Image (cartoon, rainbow, N blue to C red):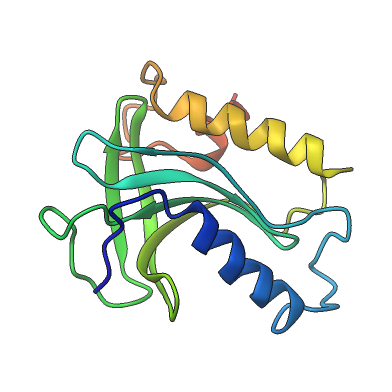
Length: 155
């Protein structure tokens, strides 16, 4: 398992750009107006990394281990809830060769509604900012905040 002592953004961009040029090349779920970009990566209070990755096929919130202590060792495709000041969010465990183990929360998949990179970037910045903001009111029966609620589309 790999942990990141420094900002993982450059490796995330390189890895997902390679995927965009190979595995995802010319698939109909890709938005030709978008390119790979890592936005707003910062350390959590637990020392892990969180931020948003824009790709032509999706916009995802990612968590990566900043240290091994406190990082849950789970199989790919498992679910894990991460707590932030704005609420609890469900992530899916994933693995990529050059990144290692990471957790993702899909915000837009596919990301076809974005007209250009700037619109996607502004959305990613808003998500990164809102993640550390005040908790949103959730329905009494919900254990975690939905993605639509998180980005302000739940009501």
